[in-house]
Amino acid sequence: MEEKVLSIINEIRAAKEMAPVESIKTDTKLREDLNLTSFDLAELTVKIEDEFDIDIFEDGLVNTVGEIIAKLQA
Amino acid sequence: MVFLSDKEKEFTYDDLLRSLNEGTVYYPYYKTSNVYSYFVNLIKAIAASKPLVLLDSDINPSEIDDIDDSKVNVAERITPTSFQCMNEVVAAVQNSKSEITIFTSGTTGQPKKVVHSIATLTRSVRVGDRYKGQIWAYAYNPTHMAGLQVFFQAFENQNTLVNVFNQPREYVYQQICEKRITHISATPTFYRLLLPFEQAYESVVRATLGGEKSDQHLYDSIMKIFPNAKINNVYASTEAGSLFAAKGDCFQIPESIKEKFKVVDDELLIHKSLLGSSDSFKFSDGYYHSGDLIEWVDETLGLFRFKSRKNELINVGGYKVNPGEVEVAIQDIEGVRQAMVYGKANSILGNVLCADVVLEPGITLTELDIKKVLNLQLQDFKVPRRIKFVEEISLTRTGKMKRV
Image (cartoon, rainbow over all chains, first blue to last red; front, side):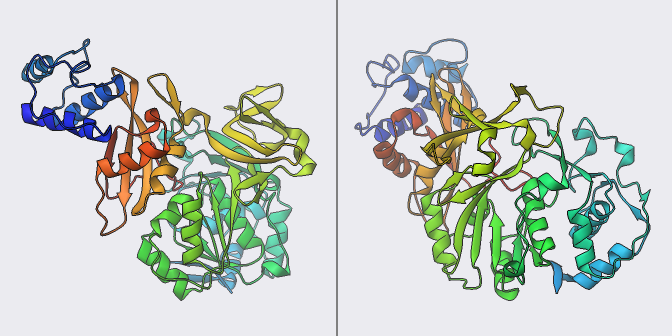
């Protein structure tokens, strides 16, 4: 699951000409550490929804990778 | 002369004359998938100045509010006719007092009912010797405005119609060859299905596009496939019929009806005297809001270009995106046959911009490849965030793209 999330994040970064990140940790911050804008986060939600059928932002903001994983495991 | 060629069947104008003269009934609410029977009923009703409601062959009448299910395919008596030749039939059609009810295709929402006179339906029909002998690819739904326009143009000149509506690419090409088709009038979506270029078809001298926005890339491809064809655009709406003359990729408001148009906030407003009648029309000061957004190329000459449909703009994080503009950019990419851009509801931005893309056979392109090209041409908010590769894009009843 983490791998899939990582590959989606790298897909988004690639389109912005940003180097891929090699690993993510639960406390990795989506905006600050990964430089994702709200447009990128929207893309992330759509792609995670395609993959896992869960809208991670449905009930409020998600700030870290750990929070995404928690939503997916819930 | 052949009137209609439909699959394996051919009907001549003599067959048509015979069908019109026999029988003493017509169907005011006729639902059929047989195109010949549909046209016989249509001409019968119009020649006798009887009212007619045009129903799609695949529609469930309960989908439409105003239609009483029990009236569908119920015959009504009509005074028998004995037309001696087709010229008499054409004259009867031209002088008809029929009221024809059609429905919008409803790219969104409930179909709207619009009642037209024969005069508004045939406003742009040209009759004369120079129109004789044309062979038309019939590429529209016969119960809707564009299909009626092509029908009247061909019929009043006693031309041949070759039915290719909703048919696959190979069949369309085979018919163009076999029937020596000279004229095609269709949606840009129809022409895109004919891509990529493989072979030139020389018999076609006119290719008309209408109903949706088209682009230079498509014109270039059509010119390759039909090297002898003049390409032009038409603007015909269910509400108003055909109104403008095409000038290249622009349209011109004819001098004679110039006073009947206004442009407010880029939207084209049409005076009610040019429209059919419908309960669903709302007027402000006698003008109808067409929902078409235009830009003037030369206002004094009445020359303008279409930008988009008003209700098609997608709100992405507060930015308004014209899906047509993004589709054109994607379709300009080598190897792309067709693209459809739409918004997907999203908790962060309101909508996320998405695209479905059909590639030409044998082409490999990734989502990233397309995004990289678009990033160079479009502002960030106009670049779709999810691009899916699909086999085909679903179409509405009239052969336009159906937005999700």
